[in-house]
Length: 319
Ligand code: SF4
Image (tube, rainbow, N blue to C red; front, side):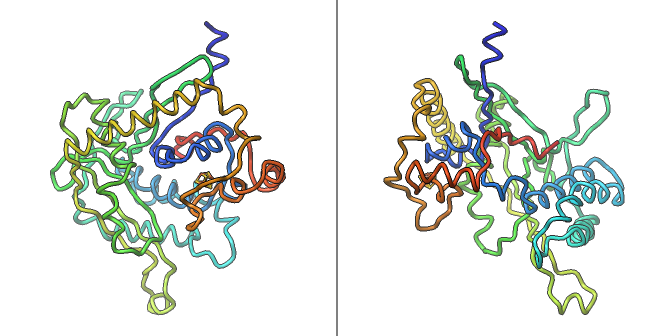
Protein backbone atom coordinates (compact mmCIF):
# COMPACT_ATOMS: atom_id res chain seq x y z
CA UNK A 1 0.00 0.00 0.00
CA UNK A 2 2.74 2.44 0.99
CA UNK A 3 4.75 1.60 -2.15
CA UNK A 4 1.73 2.35 -4.26
CA UNK A 5 1.22 5.74 -2.62
CA UNK A 6 4.88 6.61 -3.14
CA UNK A 7 4.72 5.87 -6.86
CA UNK A 8 1.60 7.85 -7.60
CA UNK A 9 2.02 11.33 -8.99
CA UNK A 10 -0.65 13.91 -8.28
CA UNK A 11 -1.87 15.79 -11.33
CA UNK A 12 -3.87 18.91 -10.56
CA UNK A 13 -6.58 19.67 -13.11
CA UNK A 14 -8.12 23.11 -12.84
CA UNK A 15 -10.23 25.33 -15.10
CA UNK A 16 -7.19 26.67 -16.91
CA UNK A 17 -6.01 23.18 -17.80
CA UNK A 18 -9.50 22.17 -18.91
CA UNK A 19 -9.44 25.23 -21.15
CA UNK A 20 -6.40 23.80 -22.91
CA UNK A 21 -7.75 20.29 -23.16
CA UNK A 22 -8.46 20.58 -26.88
CA UNK A 23 -4.76 19.85 -27.48
CA UNK A 24 -3.09 16.76 -26.00
CA UNK A 25 0.34 18.18 -26.65
CA UNK A 26 -0.35 21.10 -24.36
CA UNK A 27 -1.59 18.77 -21.67
CA UNK A 28 1.46 16.58 -22.16
CA UNK A 29 3.89 19.51 -21.99
CA UNK A 30 2.24 21.21 -19.08
CA UNK A 31 0.76 18.51 -16.90
CA UNK A 32 3.06 15.56 -17.50
CA UNK A 33 6.44 17.07 -18.39
CA UNK A 34 5.90 20.18 -16.25
CA UNK A 35 7.37 22.33 -18.98
CA UNK A 36 7.10 26.09 -18.49
CA UNK A 37 8.63 28.91 -20.58
CA UNK A 38 11.47 30.27 -18.41
CA UNK A 39 10.32 33.87 -18.71
CA UNK A 40 6.84 33.08 -17.37
CA UNK A 41 7.64 31.08 -14.25
CA UNK A 42 6.83 33.97 -11.93
CA UNK A 43 5.21 36.54 -14.08
CA UNK A 44 4.84 39.96 -12.46
CA UNK A 45 1.45 40.48 -14.17
CA UNK A 46 0.12 37.39 -12.45
CA UNK A 47 1.72 38.54 -9.20
CA UNK A 48 -0.01 41.93 -9.48
CA UNK A 49 -3.35 40.08 -9.77
CA UNK A 50 -2.50 37.86 -6.80
CA UNK A 51 -1.52 40.90 -4.72
CA UNK A 52 -4.87 42.52 -5.53
CA UNK A 53 -6.66 39.32 -4.58
CA UNK A 54 -4.82 39.29 -1.26
CA UNK A 55 -5.85 42.89 -0.68
CA UNK A 56 -9.51 42.05 -1.36
CA UNK A 57 -9.39 38.92 0.75
CA UNK A 58 -8.09 40.89 3.75
CA UNK A 59 -10.71 43.58 3.15
CA UNK A 60 -13.61 41.10 3.14
CA UNK A 61 -12.15 39.74 6.39
CA UNK A 62 -12.67 43.14 8.00
CA UNK A 63 -9.02 44.26 8.17
CA UNK A 64 -8.22 47.98 8.05
CA UNK A 65 -7.15 49.59 4.79
CA UNK A 66 -3.61 49.91 6.13
CA UNK A 67 -3.42 46.22 7.01
CA UNK A 68 -4.87 45.17 3.64
CA UNK A 69 -2.39 47.35 1.82
CA UNK A 70 0.54 45.98 3.83
CA UNK A 71 -0.41 42.42 2.80
CA UNK A 72 -0.59 43.36 -0.90
CA UNK A 73 2.63 45.36 -0.71
CA UNK A 74 4.55 42.64 1.02
CA UNK A 75 3.54 40.14 -1.64
CA UNK A 76 4.26 42.36 -4.64
CA UNK A 77 7.49 44.05 -3.51
CA UNK A 78 9.88 41.30 -4.71
CA UNK A 79 8.25 41.33 -8.15
CA UNK A 80 8.37 45.13 -8.28
CA UNK A 81 12.16 44.95 -8.02
CA UNK A 82 12.35 43.06 -11.31
CA UNK A 83 9.70 44.55 -13.57
CA UNK A 84 10.79 45.62 -17.06
CA UNK A 85 11.70 49.25 -17.80
CA UNK A 86 8.65 51.38 -18.67
CA UNK A 87 6.17 48.85 -17.24
CA UNK A 88 3.27 50.60 -15.50
CA UNK A 89 2.28 47.81 -13.08
CA UNK A 90 4.57 49.13 -10.36
CA UNK A 91 4.09 48.88 -6.62
CA UNK A 92 2.93 52.49 -6.60
CA UNK A 93 0.31 51.65 -9.26
CA UNK A 94 -0.91 48.77 -7.10
CA UNK A 95 -1.21 50.95 -4.01
CA UNK A 96 -3.12 53.67 -5.87
CA UNK A 97 -5.43 51.12 -7.47
CA UNK A 98 -6.20 49.50 -4.10
CA UNK A 99 -7.00 52.93 -2.71
CA UNK A 100 -9.23 53.72 -5.70
CA UNK A 101 -11.09 50.42 -5.23
CA UNK A 102 -11.95 51.32 -1.65
CA UNK A 103 -12.99 54.83 -2.65
CA UNK A 104 -15.25 53.39 -5.35
CA UNK A 105 -17.01 50.69 -3.33
CA UNK A 106 -16.64 51.57 0.32
CA UNK A 107 -19.81 53.63 0.73
CA UNK A 108 -22.03 51.26 -1.21
CA UNK A 109 -20.72 47.72 -1.41
CA UNK A 110 -23.39 45.29 -2.60
CA UNK A 111 -20.96 42.35 -2.25
CA UNK A 112 -21.33 40.69 1.14
CA UNK A 113 -19.27 37.63 1.91
CA UNK A 114 -20.48 34.45 3.61
CA UNK A 115 -18.51 33.39 6.68
CA UNK A 116 -17.12 30.05 7.85
CA UNK A 117 -15.29 28.99 11.00
CA UNK A 118 -11.59 28.25 10.52
CA UNK A 119 -9.54 25.55 12.33
CA UNK A 120 -9.22 27.81 15.38
CA UNK A 121 -12.98 28.39 15.54
CA UNK A 122 -12.64 31.97 14.27
CA UNK A 123 -15.10 33.53 11.84
CA UNK A 124 -13.55 33.90 8.42
CA UNK A 125 -14.91 35.37 5.19
CA UNK A 126 -15.62 32.76 2.52
CA UNK A 127 -13.03 34.12 0.13
CA UNK A 128 -10.13 32.52 -1.74
CA UNK A 129 -11.54 29.08 -0.93
CA UNK A 130 -9.25 26.47 -2.41
CA UNK A 131 -10.46 22.99 -3.25
CA UNK A 132 -8.69 19.83 -4.39
CA UNK A 133 -10.31 16.42 -4.39
CA UNK A 134 -9.48 13.16 -6.18
CA UNK A 135 -11.38 12.41 -9.35
CA UNK A 136 -9.55 9.34 -10.66
CA UNK A 137 -6.40 7.31 -10.06
CA UNK A 138 -4.36 4.42 -11.39
CA UNK A 139 -1.08 2.97 -10.05
CA UNK A 140 0.93 5.93 -11.30
CA UNK A 141 -1.31 8.99 -11.22
CA UNK A 142 -4.04 10.66 -9.20
CA UNK A 143 -6.12 13.32 -10.91
CA UNK A 144 -7.24 16.00 -8.48
CA UNK A 145 -9.86 18.54 -9.49
CA UNK A 146 -8.66 21.78 -8.01
CA UNK A 147 -9.01 25.54 -8.01
CA UNK A 148 -9.89 28.58 -5.96
CA UNK A 149 -13.28 30.24 -5.67
CA UNK A 150 -12.55 33.92 -5.00
CA UNK A 151 -15.74 34.79 -3.16
CA UNK A 152 -18.99 33.16 -2.00
CA UNK A 153 -21.74 35.37 -0.65
CA UNK A 154 -24.39 37.73 -1.93
CA UNK A 155 -24.55 40.53 -4.46
CA UNK A 156 -27.33 43.02 -3.71
CA UNK A 157 -28.93 40.28 -1.62
CA UNK A 158 -28.69 37.49 -4.21
CA UNK A 159 -26.51 34.44 -3.54
CA UNK A 160 -23.63 34.11 -5.97
CA UNK A 161 -20.01 33.21 -6.62
CA UNK A 162 -17.56 35.92 -7.65
CA UNK A 163 -14.27 35.97 -9.52
CA UNK A 164 -12.01 39.04 -9.29
CA UNK A 165 -10.32 39.74 -12.60
CA UNK A 166 -7.42 42.16 -12.91
CA UNK A 167 -6.94 42.79 -16.60
CA UNK A 168 -5.42 45.17 -19.10
CA UNK A 169 -8.24 44.32 -21.54
CA UNK A 170 -10.18 47.22 -22.93
CA UNK A 171 -12.67 45.40 -25.05
CA UNK A 172 -16.39 45.98 -24.70
CA UNK A 173 -17.09 42.25 -24.96
CA UNK A 174 -14.94 41.48 -21.92
CA UNK A 175 -17.85 40.42 -19.71
CA UNK A 176 -19.88 38.80 -22.48
CA UNK A 177 -17.52 35.85 -22.92
CA UNK A 178 -18.13 34.73 -19.34
CA UNK A 179 -21.62 33.65 -20.40
CA UNK A 180 -19.91 30.73 -22.12
CA UNK A 181 -16.56 30.49 -20.35
CA UNK A 182 -15.25 27.22 -18.95
CA UNK A 183 -13.75 28.76 -15.79
CA UNK A 184 -16.93 30.18 -14.19
CA UNK A 185 -18.94 27.14 -15.25
CA UNK A 186 -16.34 24.93 -13.59
CA UNK A 187 -16.67 26.88 -10.31
CA UNK A 188 -20.46 26.84 -10.46
CA UNK A 189 -20.34 23.10 -11.15
CA UNK A 190 -17.88 22.50 -8.27
CA UNK A 191 -20.01 24.54 -5.86
CA UNK A 192 -23.08 22.60 -6.93
CA UNK A 193 -21.29 19.24 -6.64
CA UNK A 194 -19.63 19.84 -3.26
CA UNK A 195 -22.79 21.30 -1.71
CA UNK A 196 -25.08 18.70 -3.32
CA UNK A 197 -27.45 21.38 -4.60
CA UNK A 198 -29.29 19.11 -7.07
CA UNK A 199 -30.19 21.18 -10.10
CA UNK A 200 -29.72 24.53 -8.38
CA UNK A 201 -26.75 26.48 -9.75
CA UNK A 202 -25.58 29.73 -8.21
CA UNK A 203 -25.21 32.80 -10.42
CA UNK A 204 -21.73 34.09 -11.13
CA UNK A 205 -20.34 37.62 -11.10
CA UNK A 206 -17.09 38.99 -12.48
CA UNK A 207 -15.56 41.77 -10.39
CA UNK A 208 -13.55 43.61 -13.06
CA UNK A 209 -10.42 45.59 -12.18
CA UNK A 210 -9.27 47.20 -15.45
CA UNK A 211 -5.68 48.37 -15.35
CA UNK A 212 -3.91 50.83 -17.60
CA UNK A 213 -1.00 53.20 -17.73
CA UNK A 214 -2.01 56.40 -15.94
CA UNK A 215 -2.26 59.39 -18.28
CA UNK A 216 0.14 62.33 -17.96
CA UNK A 217 -2.84 64.70 -17.94
CA UNK A 218 -4.41 62.95 -14.95
CA UNK A 219 -1.07 62.85 -13.12
CA UNK A 220 -0.60 66.60 -13.73
CA UNK A 221 -4.06 67.17 -12.30
CA UNK A 222 -3.27 64.97 -9.33
CA UNK A 223 -5.95 62.47 -10.34
CA UNK A 224 -5.63 58.68 -10.55
CA UNK A 225 -6.85 57.10 -13.81
CA UNK A 226 -4.63 54.00 -13.78
CA UNK A 227 -7.60 51.69 -13.23
CA UNK A 228 -11.36 51.41 -13.59
CA UNK A 229 -13.81 49.17 -11.80
CA UNK A 230 -16.79 47.52 -13.44
CA UNK A 231 -18.80 44.44 -12.62
CA UNK A 232 -20.61 42.01 -14.88
CA UNK A 233 -24.31 41.36 -14.40
CA UNK A 234 -25.12 38.21 -12.45
CA UNK A 235 -24.64 35.42 -14.95
CA UNK A 236 -27.18 32.60 -14.62
CA UNK A 237 -26.24 29.38 -16.36
CA UNK A 238 -29.29 27.34 -17.32
CA UNK A 239 -29.74 23.75 -16.14
CA UNK A 240 -29.26 22.58 -19.74
CA UNK A 241 -26.02 24.56 -20.04
CA UNK A 242 -24.71 23.06 -16.81
CA UNK A 243 -25.67 19.52 -17.82
CA UNK A 244 -23.87 20.01 -21.13
CA UNK A 245 -20.83 21.40 -19.35
CA UNK A 246 -20.84 18.44 -16.98
CA UNK A 247 -20.89 15.94 -19.88
CA UNK A 248 -18.19 17.88 -21.72
CA UNK A 249 -15.94 17.87 -18.66
CA UNK A 250 -16.54 14.19 -17.93
CA UNK A 251 -15.68 13.38 -21.52
CA UNK A 252 -12.42 15.38 -21.35
CA UNK A 253 -11.41 13.85 -18.04
CA UNK A 254 -12.22 10.33 -19.24
CA UNK A 255 -9.97 10.89 -22.25
CA UNK A 256 -7.20 12.12 -19.99
CA UNK A 257 -7.60 9.05 -17.76
CA UNK A 258 -7.40 6.73 -20.80
CA UNK A 259 -4.38 8.64 -22.07
CA UNK A 260 -2.61 8.19 -18.73
CA UNK A 261 -3.67 4.55 -18.47
CA UNK A 262 -2.39 3.69 -21.95
CA UNK A 263 1.14 4.94 -21.25
CA UNK A 264 1.48 6.26 -24.84
CA UNK A 265 2.72 9.59 -23.52
CA UNK A 266 6.03 7.96 -22.55
CA UNK A 267 7.20 7.82 -26.17
CA UNK A 268 5.37 10.90 -27.38
CA UNK A 269 8.23 13.39 -27.22
CA UNK A 270 10.51 11.70 -29.72
CA UNK A 271 7.71 11.03 -32.19
CA UNK A 272 6.25 14.51 -32.27
CA UNK A 273 6.08 16.27 -35.64
CA UNK A 274 3.61 19.10 -35.86
CA UNK A 275 1.03 18.24 -38.50
CA UNK A 276 -1.94 20.38 -37.59
CA UNK A 277 -2.58 23.06 -35.04
CA UNK A 278 -5.48 25.46 -34.92
CA UNK A 279 -3.52 28.08 -32.99
CA UNK A 280 -0.70 28.68 -35.47
CA UNK A 281 -2.07 31.87 -36.96
CA UNK A 282 -2.75 33.54 -33.68
CA UNK A 283 0.43 32.09 -32.11
CA UNK A 284 -1.68 31.89 -28.98
CA UNK A 285 0.00 28.83 -27.61
CA UNK A 286 3.02 29.19 -25.35
CA UNK A 287 4.36 25.88 -26.69
CA UNK A 288 4.35 26.82 -30.36
CA UNK A 289 8.06 27.66 -30.37
CA UNK A 290 8.95 24.07 -29.42
CA UNK A 291 6.01 22.23 -30.87
CA UNK A 292 6.80 23.34 -34.41
CA UNK A 293 10.42 22.07 -34.32
CA UNK A 294 11.82 18.67 -35.24
CA UNK A 295 12.42 16.46 -32.17
CA UNK A 296 16.21 17.10 -32.27
CA UNK A 297 15.95 20.89 -32.50
CA UNK A 298 13.19 20.88 -29.94
CA UNK A 299 15.49 19.39 -27.30
CA UNK A 300 17.92 22.31 -27.77
CA UNK A 301 15.17 24.91 -27.62
CA UNK A 302 13.68 23.32 -24.51
CA UNK A 303 17.03 23.46 -22.78
CA UNK A 304 17.50 27.13 -23.65
CA UNK A 305 14.00 28.48 -23.01
CA UNK A 306 11.94 26.08 -20.93
CA UNK A 307 11.97 24.70 -17.45
CA UNK A 308 11.16 21.01 -17.15
CA UNK A 309 9.69 19.20 -14.19
CA UNK A 310 7.73 22.11 -12.70
CA UNK A 311 4.73 20.46 -11.12
CA UNK A 312 1.56 22.09 -12.39
CA UNK A 313 0.19 23.36 -9.11
CA UNK A 314 -2.62 25.88 -9.61
CA UNK A 315 -3.05 26.50 -5.87
CA UNK A 316 0.57 27.62 -5.48
CA UNK A 317 -0.17 31.32 -5.94
CA UNK A 318 -2.69 31.27 -3.10
CA UNK A 319 -0.13 30.44 -0.43
S1 SF4 B 1 1.39 24.73 -30.75
FE1 SF4 B 1 -0.60 23.86 -31.33
S2 SF4 B 1 -0.26 21.63 -31.38
FE2 SF4 B 1 1.45 22.56 -30.25
S3 SF4 B 1 0.85 22.45 -28.10
FE3 SF4 B 1 0.22 24.43 -28.88
S4 SF4 B 1 -1.92 24.17 -29.56
FE4 SF4 B 1 -1.01 22.17 -29.33
